[in-house]
Length: 127
Image (cartoon, rainbow, N blue to C red):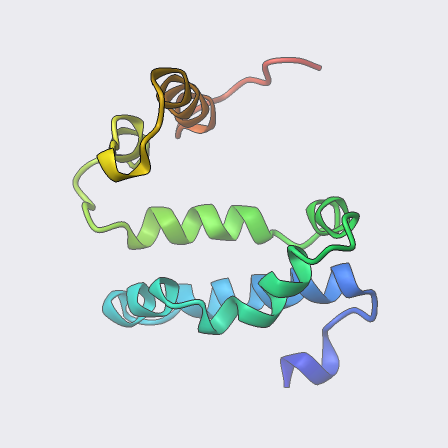
């Protein structure tokens, strides 16, 4: 069992390992099942609660844990997106929801963030 054998003892290591395991397991499921799993927070509920707890330092520790949490999350988004014919960057770039009530400045920040994180970026902006 993964949780008995492989999970690190540190809280941040445990969160990173559990989220990585849940994301990887989701990627191995048929797309319809995986999309449903990602739509609910069931698989990630306890790990996410720990990640976003009031302790504050958990985020940095998870980020530097060595577990590919965020790369797996991006891969899950890429593999399980609803429009397989267009890139995830283009799907997210001009995504707009009036109900969010974002200002023009907030929408610009969203677009810049999507472009920066977009697929195909091959160089680092700063060293």
